[in-house]
Image (cartoon, rainbow, N blue to C red):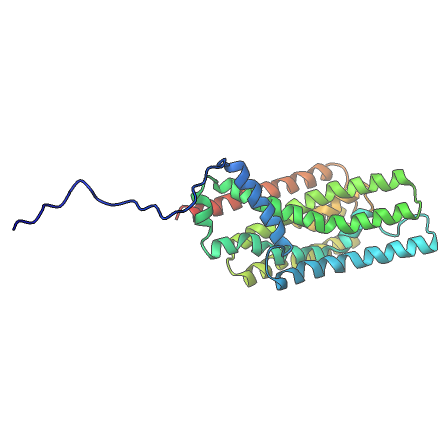
Length: 297
């Protein structure tokens, strides 16, 4: 009895397992980028993650809000004619908390995807490395802006409650807001780039702390020494090497209520602004190069 010859033209069988077919609208890159941005912002504050992930960001935010609430209480109860601290200077005074928040949360957005290689899955979809880097950077920038803006708004509402001059308060608030946007983009770019290179969370946090806190302290000491020696130009020039000194220098030049060891004026003002913009652009280019290199492996 001869065996029937196999059907060489039939290489496989498709079985219908009963899965529901997707018949909706297939959204493209804008929807993916928007979702990535929103989830990044939520994760920066621990939302959608474990309970312990929420402790650090909200603890730091509460510590940042407490002095603002105390200032408001003092102004309202004593009837002071002005706030004892300007809006921009309050951000400058709480720079340690802002820096710790950025150092702690940047690895959440930039290190985890690289460490677990999930970045390959992201970039396998219709999402380019530049878009991925931009969305992550925007998420951290907005998270930092909210961190600085919430205490500022508390101060502003307290000033209105104390019936201080509305025009002066609005002007001060708008100046602080512009400076905070610039600072948020700076700090997000720096900590994001450090976190994308240092895949271990601990190394990324230490690296960010070294740049945002230690380097800023060294710059501040050198600025004060140079100003004490009447070397104002040297003092101002040293301020170009730290994001916080750039923030303070631009705030001083804009009369936003922040005093620097030496006044930032003349040609130094556009120099400070140019260095800030170039630093943001350089960090973004570094992030794009990093994600593009890892995603192509």
